[in-house]
Amino acid sequence: MPELPEVETIRRQLEKKIVGKTLDGPSISLRVNKKIVGVRRRAKILIIDFSDGSSLLFHLKLTGQLIFNGQLSKHTRHVFKFSDDSQLIFNDMRKFGWWKYVKDSKDIEKAFGPEAPEINLKAFQGILKKRLNAKIKPLLMDQKFIAGIGNIYSDEILFAAKVQPLRRVKTLTPKEIKAIWLNIGKILKEAIRKRGTSERDYVDALGKKGDYLKYLKVYRREGQKCSRCGGIVKRIKMGSRSAHFCPKCQR
Image 1 (cartoon, one colour):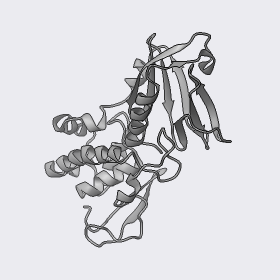
Image 2: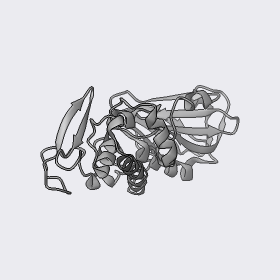
Image 3: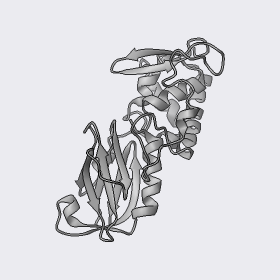
Image 4: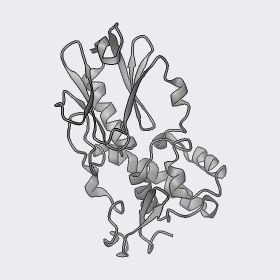
């Protein structure tokens, strides 16, 4: 599932490609054209803003793709056409992704917690204190707690911080909390620089795969040797999700 680095990569690329263009009305079931004035991201949602204050929202979910001037395929769910004959293709093999046109995106945006790379240490410590009995990995993926982190990067952040994903918040030391916070920023920013992780279906807005997959330390590496201590990476189920970690060096 595309997480913050993948959606942010797409946002930055589309910002260069479509700002200033006019989206034809029929593309969004309207009879008036819409001029694009900005492309934003909130959590894992991509937001295209129009000059009249309305917005087009996208959530890619598991297999969604947004490709500028991409080729149509059997998985194409919608084509957004611009007045200069360029287009934005929305593909989604499993059909869990969605897009919607809204007059005002503020209510949707308010449902999310602070953006993960932007939160300072004091604020991070403060919101952790409100969830002392929560397990740290699911909490990091809770979009109401902190926005943008999913399954891949929660595993990588906790590995870098040497914290076991099943640990409850109340057991974390101040040093461990700081390590988690530091690695949230470090890993997400590096993943953005590498244009995200193409584990399966993700491609960027130019149709290219991200480069961060080869830098992953534990995600999808169960049974392999830990790059840090030589232990064996383990995978466990956590509800409908899983967690990857090294039981030897993550405590």
